[in-house]
Structures are given as C-alpha cells and as structure tokens.
Length: 290
Image (cartoon, rainbow, N blue to C red; front, side, top):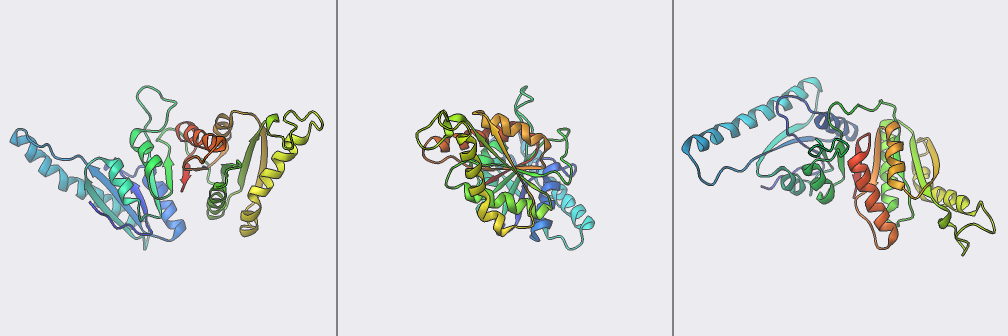
C-alpha cells in the first residue's frame, strides 16, 4: 500500500490502547519541526483460508483497529491545538510497511521491546529492520520502564574520521539546537592513531592525543560555525572499544546520534559496529542519520 507522508514525522504504533513512548517522541519531533504527524499501525494479513469464524473475526477487527488509532489521534489533537495528525492502518508486516512509507517521511520513529530473554538487547526485530533499511532518518525510542532522559540532557555524538561523518555531525547540532541543550562530542583514540609513521608515539608521547584533538576539532568546525548557539563539550577517550565507551556515555544523554552504515575500509567497519552497539545497548533514544 502506498502512503504519502511527504515531509511528515511517521511513527509506528503497535499499542492501540494508549499513547506509547514512541508516539510521544514523534509528537515532540513534529512540534519542533512544525510539520505533520502520521500514526501508522500495521494489521496482520488475513488468513488465506480457515473456518469462517476466523475470517469473520478478522473482518471485524480491522475497522476496530482503525477506530482505536483514530481515537488516539483525536486525543493528540485535543491536547495540542493546531496539530496536524493523521492515521494509516496498513495490512501486512509492520517493518516493510514503515520502510516503504519512509521514502517520503521527514523522520521515522519506532519503539523497541527487547529480544527474547536477553534484557540487555533493547532492539526488537521490527525496530532493527527499520533502522537498517528505512529511507529517512530514524529515531529509536527505548521501552517503557527503561527510564526517561531529563529534558536538559545533552545530545551525544561519536566522531570518527569517516568522510560521511559530516552529515551526522550536522544532524547532531540540529538536534541539540532544536532541544536547546548542549552537544557532547566524543572521539575515541588509541596510541596506534598517531600520524607520521610514529605508531606508538615514541618520539613524542603526546602526538596521538594531539592528533585526536585536531581530528575532533576539524570534524566539528563547520557545524559549530553554523550553530554558534550550541554549547559543545569535547571529550577524548583513550580506548579501542568505541561502542562500549559510547554506550557508557549515553547514560547521561538525552539522545545519541549515529550514522546509518559503514564506508569502505576499516573506519567504515568501525562506524557500523558502533551504530549497532548503540542501537542495542544505549541508555537513551538513538537517532540514525542517512
């Protein structure tokens, strides 16, 4: 089913009984951006065959789902004057439906439920598929009971040397500016990062850290010029376990911003692994930038 959600914030709704954290987050993003909000619920495909009571129950459940979703939209309209919110019920699996709809969306928002008995793995199968394959930026919201970041919690970004990192840095500044919070920019480095053929820093022990600082400053420079209002906290962490370090840092953040995929070479592999670590383990919502 084709959906036109051009320029809107799109949110997947799997709980029709109330306003889920993902809907609340999508609402906040739509209000910040001054754009419309689309609530999308995916309804399982009808059975190809079976006893007539099953088919009758299915036929009755579909309009009920539409009604419950519209009631949720009506509650949002009633609580927020002038809010442009619409609803879409699609038949099929939620992940493909959201991925297809995201082609024209400004942002796609999904919640997550965790995986089986592994409570430390926060990303459910639908969220994982959407985060990996959607066409728009994605915001992945943590499940209820996982804690809600403070309103003034900073935006966190991990900075590396990947060429496409400039888009992620720009998005992190945009998010920090829209929220009125500071940006914490982290670069993880190791002694092997030293330039100029001195891998261990034997001639100048401070060379690797100086190089790391220069890399971080250079990566932030253009966006800092465009967003002078955003206060930036620069942080160097000496480690090769970048994903684990950023997961720890996310405990104090309101949002962590990551890239969507790796690039050619070792740096690309690192970026992809870091993004995966944060999507599964971060303590706060994660924005995946395309």
